[in-house]
Image 1 (spheres, rainbow, N blue to C red):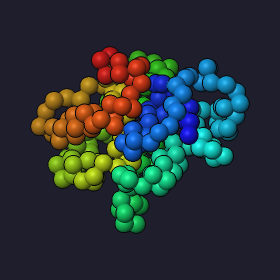
Image 2: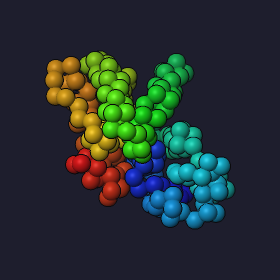
Image 3: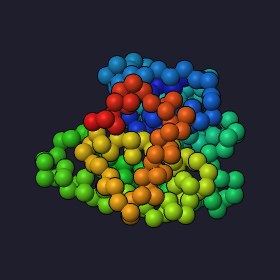
Length: 203
């Protein structure tokens, strides 16, 4: 099994977290789009990383990769057992992908004007802050177990300082800050970080 992974990409880190949490033996080939051979990029019709190759199978969608790994290596499970809870987890992952990831990607790209960037930072901070109260009820993101939803959300939280967003330390955000600390200290999360990503939080 080989994961072609962008060393500074939150979509790639999602998959690396799953590999680390499940202690799956896989070769992780870190690169950038520019350094990735065309024969590898051609696996993905969108010419993007990550790409997961497992024998004759090649996957190019991070969500499909995560669920494939969770099904092929069922312990520890990273999706709930019951269908309703699974559907809720998938809905949360879709919300992250459709609503938050475009904002994160635009901030990382950094091509907007200063005024537009500031507005986008405020919007993303508002969106993330709005879910803080839920972490009073659950240990993780709408669950008492670490799931694929956390694998999607944690890389975004990790990158906030690097895109100019600092979570305020206040009573409202305390549950979210506690969650963030707990997730960032997980061995699986720490093992997923590339050398470039380890530096992001300090920016």
